[in-house]
Image (tube, rainbow, N blue to C red; front, side, top):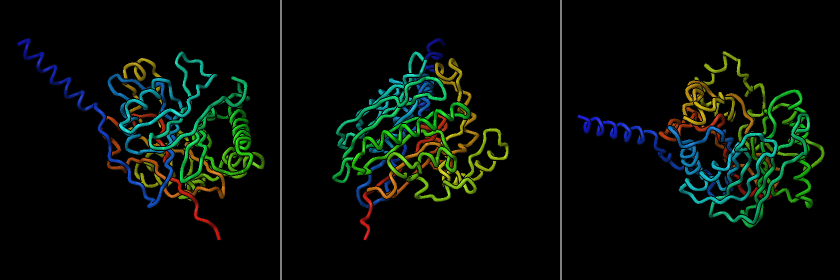
Amino acid sequence: MARHRTVLLLTLLATVAAACASVPPAVLPTDPAGPALRVMTFNLLGAQGDDAVYSEHAGWAARVDQLQPDVLVVQEAQSEDVTALLSRTRTAYRLAAYELWWCDAKNNPEGVAVLVRGDVTSTGGGGTNVGGSCQDPTMSRVLVWADVAFAGQSYRVYGTHLTAGGGAAALSRARQIDLVRARIATDDPGAGRRWLLAGDLNFVPGSGDYRRMLEGSDGPGPMVDTFAARSPGANDPAVCPQYASDDTTAQPFLLANPATVRACGYTAGWAKDDNLLQCEVLSLCTSWEVRRDTSVRNRIDMVLAPADGPLEVVRTFVPSRADADWAAPGAEWFRLADHLPYVVDLAPAAPTS
C-alpha cells in the first residue's frame, strides 16, 4: 500500500512539474523584408523571480526566445535574474552592460542590464548612476548602454529606469530626464544621432515629463516615441487615456477590448505583490490571480529614437490577452512581472530626395 502511495505521489509530482514546465511559445515573425534591429525593453519585477513552485526565470527565457530581440534592456534585474537570462535562453546572449542602482537598500539590489544576441556584433558597453543623491528631489537612477553594429553602422542603445511617483519624486524624474538628455548629447558630439533610449520611463504620453524628454530644447535634440510612430493615437490622451488604479469602469472596458489595449501600447498598471514569503519565497503571489483577471492600463515602457535619425520604425509589438499563447504554460504573461515588454523593429531610413 505504501508503495502504491509513493508511486501515486511521484506521478502527481511529475504531473505538476510538467504543468509548470516552460513551453517555448512560437517565434514571433518579423515584418521587414530587409534587415531590422529589434530592441526589447522589459521591467522584470526581479525581486519576485525564483525557481520555486513557478519559475519566472524559465518564463522570461521562454519569452525572450520567442521575441528574439537583438538588444534586450531589462530593469529591476537582480544578479541571478541576469544570470538566468544568459543561461536559460536557447538563443545565445551575452551581457553588454549591467549597473546596480546604488540607492537600492535591499540585500540583493536591482539594476538595469543590456543583453545582446550572440550573432549581433557588440563593440562595448558601460553604465553609471546619473545624479549624486539618494533622496528626492535629486534621486539618482541607472543609465547603461551598449554599442552594437547594424547595417554597417555603430549604434548605441541606452537603458534606464526613471523614478516613479509625484511630488518630490516627480522632481527627481524631471532632473533625471535632463541628465539623461545631457549625457546622450555629450556622447554624440558630432550629432550622428545613432542612438536609442529604452526603458521604464515612468511617465505617460501627453504628460509634462513626456514632452520634457521628447521636446527638450537642450541636449540631443527632439526624440521620437517609436510606438507612437506606428500608432499615432497612442500619444493622444483623448484616444488612449492612462487609467488610474481606482477607475472601476476601466477594467471591464479593457478586458472586453484587448485590441484597444494593444493599439494603445499599454504595458503597465498590473498589481504588484510585495509579500516576501508568499511571493518571493514560495512563488505563490496573489497578484498573479489579480493580473489574470485585470489588464494593464498605462504606457510607461518605451523606446525613443532621435527625430529624423538614421533609423525608422517598421514594426512594434506589445503582447495582449488577444494573443493565442497569452497563457502559454510556464510562460504566462500575467505571471512574469507587473509589466509587459515592448518590442520595436528598426531599419535604415530611406534616403530623402
